[in-house]
Amino acid sequence: MRLFVAILLLLHGLITSAQAPAGFRPSEGIANPGWLSWFPVNLGQSWLLKSIGTPKPILGTILGFFWIIAGVSLIAAALGLLEVIVPPNFWRPLAAIGAITSLVMFVFYVHPFYTVGIAADFAILIILLWAKWPTPEVLGS
Image 1 (cartoon, rainbow, N blue to C red):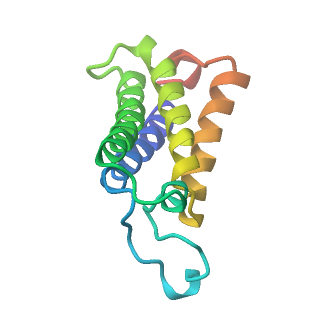
Image 2: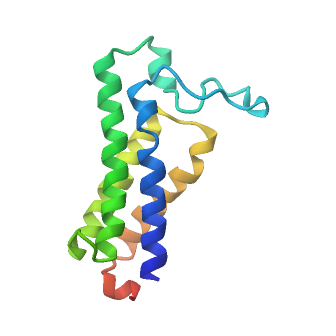
Image 3: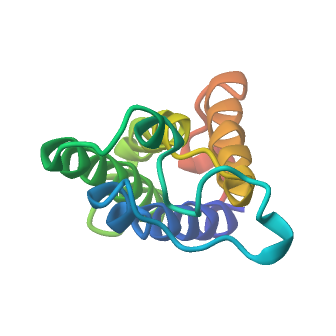
């Protein structure tokens, strides 16, 4: 079970980190496929920042770093759970930081393709909060 959760955290962290280029350039994005042309913004484009006009470069830089913080926190949580490089007792707070930061970023970058990431963040928080922050021992080795 521990390996399964660690792999999910690692994958979610890598995908979340991959969103950083969109954060650094919030007015750009990848064109939506034809069947999703009804959606008002492209994948990786901030609907909120688009509605208020072209953002200043500093804002894009800050948003890009928040994507990186979220992704690296999730990756570090996975490593902590596996007891590799990161101390095992850090995995729970790192997972919470990554999930919360990621959810905050989804407010700026809402898109139908991000529903899986949003669900993953909520699942992480539910597991951590309602399961009383399971320790690596509870998850098994």
